Amino acid sequence: MTRRMGILLRTFMVSIVLLVGCSNGDTEKTESTDTGKEIVYATSKDINDMNPHFYSGSMPAQGMVYESLVENTEEGIKPSLAESWEVSEDGKVYTFHLRKNVTFHDGEPFNAEAVKKNIDAVQSNASKHSWIKLSTKIVDCNVLDEYTVELVLSEPYYPALVELSMTRPYVFISPKNFVNGGTKYGVSGYNGTGPYKLTEHKVDQYAVFEANENYWGGAPKVKKITAKVLPAGETTFLALQKGEVNFVFTDDRGANSLDVEAMNQFVESGEYQMIRSEPMNTGIVVANSSKSESPVHEKAVREAFWHAIDRETISKQIFEGTEQAAYTLFSSNVNYANVELEKRGYDLEKAKKILEKAGWIIGNAGEFRTKNGKPLAMKLYYDVNSSTQKTQAELIQNTVKRIGVQLEIIGEESSSIANRRSTGDYDLLFNQTWGLAYDPQSTIAAFTSKSSYYHTTRGIAQADELYKKMEEVMVSTNEEHRKSLYADILTIVHTEAVFIPITNGRVTILAPKNLQGISFKQTQFELPFERMYFE
Image 1 (cartoon, rainbow, N blue to C red):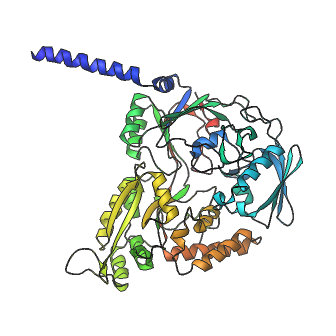
Image 2 (tube, rainbow, N blue to C red):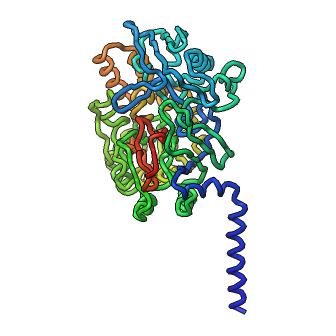
């Protein structure tokens, strides 16, 4: 009887395997990784709406499809769709000379008219782009001839070229894809000029990008890239084991599909390589100074919380040394950020004294502090798609408990957390600075943006002074004055402890060992897939 049951069980298991193989609608798409010609990367979220003038789309995906006039590199701003440019003496007029013989994926010519239509489309939806200060400075975009375009600003703005180089919104889509003459109400297709074109998309399952054989920079050697939507952690781990995906990297929400320990297992197998970028950004906990009904409104609470975070342990145990402990909003290698600021280290005794001085006491009733009958209780939100944020949150929860802080940790989807940030419905949440290509100006510009950090900064005592200095630094034409203003801005937010640094982050890639040409851009949000090739 037992032997018969064993035979039946084995038969049943074989049948299940066959059924799964037959019913998996995208099996054919992932099995092609065996040929070594395709990159299939795991992503925790769908590519969503790929309209390049909106912000819901996947930035790694948009970076493959769309391009900007200029590119931000380690050596500075370089040509992209514009071969060269001049800036007027007063800093208000930028004249771009466009690359010739470039076409959109649908065959439409890329020229000055296309540039004007796209920039006008972005500017017609100005409120959507208020976070990027360039959007408030552009007065006009003029066509001078077929391949020359002029951008007129209301006043000098030193980060103009940097902001034109971003993944969005100042990138170009075929005017044929415009709806009602623009992109504000959506687009009818996703045809850019980039090295890859989107050819297939099944929502919340996968998206396929095929090489643009007519790409002005030369046809990419990797002919097909598939973005496969998978939950972070064990599901992605198993998909790698099965060969369903062969590439993993930090996505545009700062979420890791795999932790470092899991990646190391694949490296040890001899079939994979792990490559890390230089420090790109700072992982932070953002504190809502505007939430007057919460203890987080108090500077003393924020400062004590800062001292209660054991960054060295997070760096060594959670990130296995791949990310370094951070004590300032920006690392010193970021432009204008090499500023002397007080180092707030891990010091529980100091944290306790700060709270006691501020009137937060521990009574006989319990282990958590109170003030005027109000408990020292806060909520910290983390991204459920990150393999590390939950672990960090749990460690922080345990350490702040030792200073009398009751911290509830809550995991949500990245879109939900982004919504909380924009509405101010949070005490504390995880986030990250924009990165080398964007900072300090982009993260700082977001201090006044309702969709970003307005609620973070609005409640501090020096908010108005901070905003005034922000406006001044962006239009300053004097380098020394600009340095002085940035030093003041960084000192204010550091003193107020509204951006609590954790670690300096890097982009980590896990890829097949025979994939060569892997490199990084100045942004953690996209990768130059067009430079990669299989040996």
